Each structure stands twice: as structure tokens, then as C-alpha cells.
Image (spheres, rainbow, N blue to C red):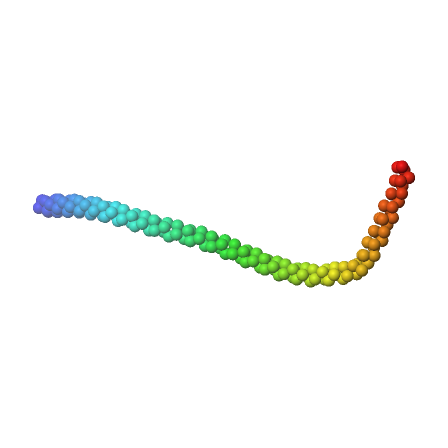
Length: 151
């Protein structure tokens, strides 16, 4: 009986120990659960902060890409403008050459006109004199015809 009581006592003591262990484990589990919740909340906040910073960096990169594209387009426009300047310079050279040719032709035309005038001047008075003579003869004929027709 003593043994029985001792076993019963030991069994009760074990039950009390088990109950204490169960309660301690439960309390530790609750504490760990609360710590985990707090850690998870902090990690979520940190993750959101990192995400926000990453989005800002990406937005900045996107803006820089747009600016780079804009600069690229401006560079293309400058290149086209340079090409046009080259074309204008080429046209200027051609116009200069044409002006020189026109000046040379103008000089030749002037010389030719002077030569023609010099050739025509001596011949002209004679032809005017012939015309004057013919006009006088025709006027005389008209007067004669008038006298015959009109008494």
C-alpha cells in the first residue's frame, strides 16, 4: 500500500509537473506568437519602405530614360540642321559660280552690243536718209493726187 500511495503521489506529482509544463509551454507559445506577429508587422513595414524606395528609383530611371530619348531626338535634329547648313553652303557656292558666269556673260554681251552699235551707226544715217527721201516722194505724190481729185 505504501508503494501504491507512493506511486499515486508520484503520479500526482507528475500530473502537476505535466500541467505546469503544459501551462508554461502554452504561455511561451503565446509569447512567441506575439513576438512573431510583431516581427511580421515590422518586416511588412520594412518591405513596404523598400518597395516605395524601389518605385521611386524606377520612376527616376524612367524619367532619365525619357530625358535621354529627348536628348537623342534633339541630337538628330542638330544633325539634320547641320546637313541643311551643308546644303546651304553648297547652294551658296553654286550661286557664286553662277554670278561669276553671269558677270562674264554680261561683259561679253556689253562688248558685243558696243561692237554692233559701232557697226550699225555708220550704216544707219544712210538708211534714214533713204527713208526720208522716200517719204518726201510719197508726200509729193499724195499732193499731186489731191490736186487731180480735188479741184
